[in-house]
Image 1 (cartoon, helix red, strand yellow):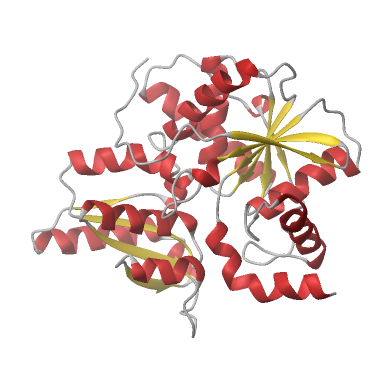
Image 2: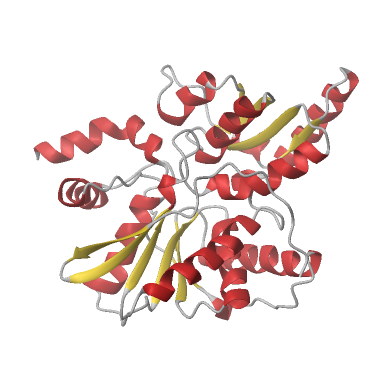
Length: 325
């Protein structure tokens, strides 16, 4: 097995905490504790991607995402920490007011470029043109894919699976299912590979917050198998190795329904746990709906909290209005 190098930036291992919801114990893997500036799952992937960028002597990090992209914000924060320039291509129109992750992007000194969906669909080509333009100015730029999801980036969650496996040795009753939000596929892909390498017994469940299950099954399998081939891991991943649950983001990626907000505000008040509207909120709602409300079989659940707290602030008015109803 050929394990790639990384830059150590994240505060890991992150703890596992327990809450009791509707009488059921849910373990929370607190990956929102990886660091204040880059809180969440993105930094685990970036540790590997940044090492490669530095090895290539990069001056500029280029990446992409939605306007409230956690990954884009984390990349901008890392660039600022390491003295690099960052360019962010964000999907959507420039808002009249900057808040949440977008405000932090600016605070971290990122150069922000807003693009249409059509342009975003060709973001690789746009990034390559920018890289060529910067090269003429004597600057070395490296493109980091959406969400840091690449055969190299998923090592962040291959190693997280190892981390979870070690931590669970002290638990008498281990989770039958581990649940995580799925937005670009890299986190789940890493967990699937890590499960096979390090003997995790739990079933892996991804809650779709963006695409359809068919899209994600292919994305996750391709990322996992490309990683296995590149790093000589000797494993093969199929869609039977994980489950994608659909139907929990019908309101759209950057929106959240009243029903979900009611659950999120309840969780905030009763457990002191903050869940964002794009990822963790939808995933937590999907988990409790599928297993607890619908009564699908499980023993114990683990929820991987992938961060995203800054995404709450653009929706704070709706959160507070929900409390008043």
